[in-house]
Length: 465
Length: 137
Image 1 (cartoon, rainbow over the protein chains, first blue to last red):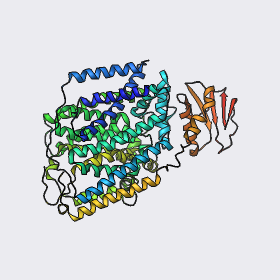
Image 2: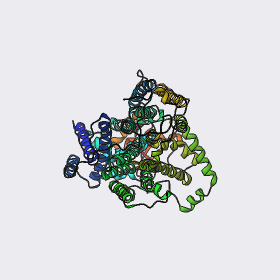
Image 3: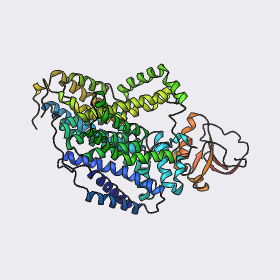
Image 4: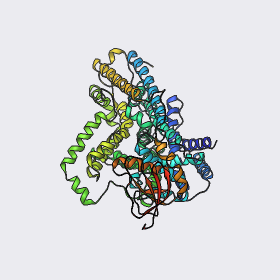
């Protein structure tokens, strides 16, 4: 009973946050896109509310939730409805001949069913998560938050540095919030939340691509994602990489939405999603800064001045990101002990001056580019590269600000990952071996979105519809 | 929806598309191969090695605070230590004997050595002993 109440409150919270910026729309793709945002923003909001309740030692979580929802509801009532999106005409619809369309449809339905089966049975066989990080980091933090009461901060003790107490608490706090309603620490909750994020990532990718480029592009993008074995295994792992990949993707999707709606609220919601990324994992903080720089960099590189309009856009993005960025910085300053990646400047400079480290990391990036998905026989990334070089160019995309900003965001994030490996105090091979595939998985749905948004498969010069 | 006529899609792109779909299907085959089989959906042993294993000793421990831990040595013993912490949270389990209460946890891979200065309070079976350290700092 109380679990159902928690689910309703979480959904309502997500709905109120999403509806501040997104128009409801009428098509099934619009409905699915909004549903993903509602579910995952609700989970993110739930984590924030739980931490606030813990910090202020609020005894009645239900009342705190109701208060937050009432406040958001009031803001929603006072705010004007978001603008309806309009077609911007940069992207042609991607359609395939009937034969390929049928092959694609059957393959997508089959692969999605297999992925769903594998994720669900994986969660049944590994109820506490698949891998050390589930019980040594994420679910452990959730237990401290839920069972710790007034001493919840013990979970961030320096006596257990291996549990990475510096990791932000979106997933653990959301899990603890649901546990509080349930009254026990059932392993089903993190499993279900993991499944919700994985499913939302797939649905968000497909629905966003449907809106941008039509159903065939959506099925192709969706097929590529659901047939990535590593993505499917991580769906049941109860790690935070899939939730992070959702917030990466949602940020980029909203940057695209902004270019159709022109509403600054969409940009603010993109900022909020980037903020939730920072609230999910430390990599999200890097992504947030990359997203800010990525919006300005194309102009700076083109030696064009950053005009008032662009400044306002960046400001709107930062306004959205600000609450969670502030919360994350507060958490890092007052709750979490320092992370293990940054050591003394001398040590970091010494590592940065060692050329061999760059070569090793470059080699691993190259190797993992072909392997991280755990594909069988043919690396899908290789096929996508081939497809890109065989496809024709849409000249109009050169002016696509959302594409440029999104591409730069991902590139800068990857450069940041590279830099962290350069200065890591951990044994380099060990660190690369146990993390690089997950880092690449985090950007994989976003990479697929950008790829299928921009690839053109027509013969001859491009015609935009 | 108006579909693209087959001749509008260049042959090389048609081949690339089919290769992409086939490579996705190959990987789907891998997902099927490694997915748990419907006739064998028994849960793994994490609960046995954590919550169930430490259920008895948890009753004898304070619900919050810090206790020490001693167990098998080496990297292979790390999961046992992590699972102990997972089971006993929100109690912090420090891998050190410098605490009033120390939990000895040996799963049978190594034989426990003598621990000078530690006195047994209670044995819980399965290699779990609760100890007191009189010299704890």
